[in-house]
Picture: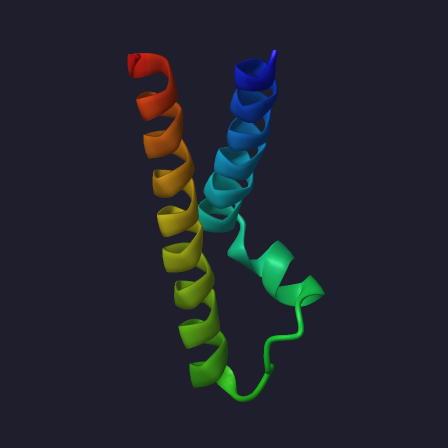
Length: 69
């Protein structure tokens, strides 16, 4: 039962990470990130995509480790 709940939570985290990669503007609009000039927006968008990729990769790796046993 615990493993199923953990797997569900990790799938949700992985989904949020993937969403950060493909729709960073949606998260950027709703976050407290600074919205300066055009260049700052590009860096913010790239930062959200990179953070989402790392977030998803960690969640997927933990899922892999969980089911590998």
